Picture 1 (cartoon, rainbow, N blue to C red):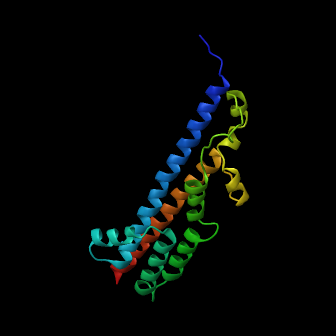
Picture 2 (picture 1 turned 90 degrees about the vertical axis):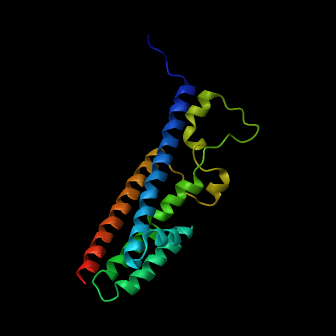
Picture 3 (picture 1 turned 90 degrees about the horizontal axis):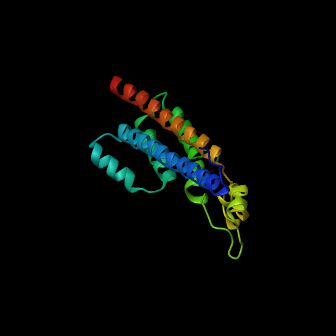
Length: 180
């Protein structure tokens, strides 16, 4: 027995796909946060629980990156690792960095209802789902990027790559510090 896909079914599938991608992206972002915490711990040393608690009390990602840079400036000052650390911090935090891309997903993307008074049947909604899964008009006026599900999935990959880059750099720092 076959059933025809209705516009409502298409809409439900697109919304599910969209929200799944957002959820995976936010979970992957936690990898970036975790690896940055671990790098900070490596640079600062001491009791892991205390260092982690202090570092993660700061809600601002740019501030956390500055904390890593400050710790690296002291701990890696006379090593070949200071410049790669600064480069890493820059790629995490600059205008094209993963932090900005995370913020676009976390703060500017939302599923929203049609404007008040707009009578929207399931077929029309299904045809315009990308519009209704994108930022609201206020967001568009702010020139915020409208992301599609595939854009979010690509950013998720970038978050994974950033976490790996931090982890790999942290391993280099650990090896260097152990050798001194």
